[in-house]
Length: 96
Image 1 (cartoon, rainbow, N blue to C red):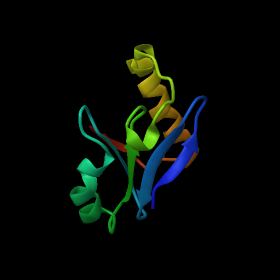
Image 2: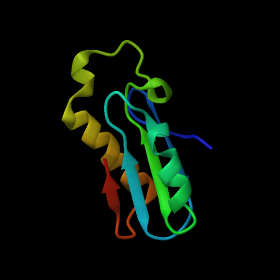
Image 3: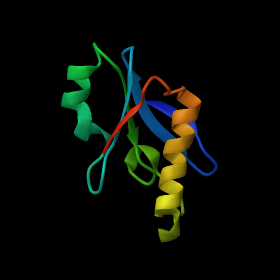
């Protein structure tokens, strides 16, 4: 199931499945969150696997966005907020 986390000017989409040590998957350009489906399905029985749809991609679209909305500062703050809100604190592994 795709969940939504409200940020200042858009909703950040993510999935989170399983229990145990936390793993967070971040896709790159031009991919999307579904890039990680196979590995997510392999790991979700052993770990808590969270996959995020980065800002500006179809499930986390920003209306009337400017190019400056996609700098590393904003992207990293999105991830930091997600980590805090979901309590991804069980020896978190981040994969990108």
